Length: 65
Image (cartoon, rainbow, N blue to C red; front, side, top):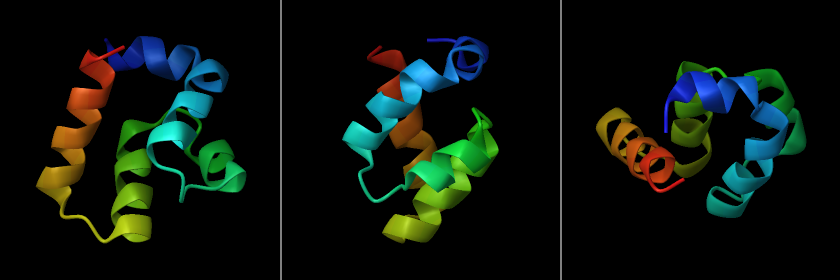
């Protein structure tokens, strides 16, 4: 799925993001507000993943929608 579409419907997708990455808080999601780079950074911070791993997981997740 196109990230612009996710960003445009952020409130709908933020619940699905919480299902996949439960360590993200509601405050995190409100701050991110659909910005992919910020989401990548928060996932890295919360889970200790590398940048490439986060990009791959987000791509796989968005393509599965």
